[in-house]
Image (cartoon, rainbow, N blue to C red; front, side, top):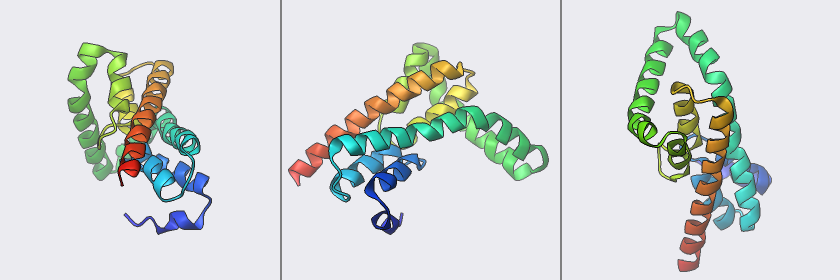
Length: 160
């Protein structure tokens, strides 16, 4: 991933935009903000959390209408959404049956690839979790993930 563009914009905006990216999310934005952009921890945390939360809100409200619209006439989109939805259900189903909405919080909070706000929002939509509850648990998961990533980042940078 070419990240040279982050040097050309304000560090807060770069952090915010990095946190909005799928897969990277705040797992990438916090360490880069602290280590490369020399932002204080509190700023990198705030801009990362906000940047990571916005896509979750958009996904919860737009994935249904957008997937129906794109799948209606285009088979490639129908196949893609079928693959994506099946994969997400498979990864989240057992956890949700056991833990309920708390599973959503921890699924988002674990700072590993293929977990996080993007996948959590998609899972919440697929499982029909109330939007208000989804936004609360996803938000709490993002906050917790930000703390975990911040602590790991601080430990790594002190070690180096």
